[in-house]
Image 1 (cartoon, one colour):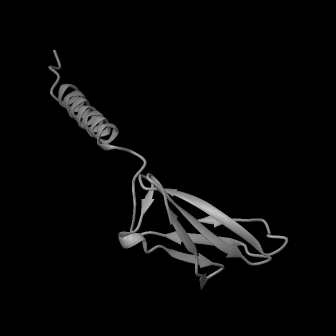
Image 2 (spheres, one colour):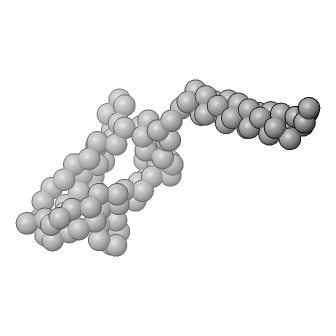
Length: 105
């Protein structure tokens, strides 16, 4: 989604859409400008698409919708996060067990 202050006049606007960020099945994106479905031109490059459109004067909001958006984080950072959370839970339980089962003498 792109939000603009204002567009002074009708303009041609091109966006590069890398395959590893956003993709659409059969290259069928949906382009919505200020709530209206809008036609676009599409050029395929080896690692991205270029999506061209006419932006009307005073347009405020552009949405490009693909069939899926690729998450920014890969598998490795998510695994590290999971291992860290398991470690924190383990240490918290171990700490709780030690403090509740302490010998009073």
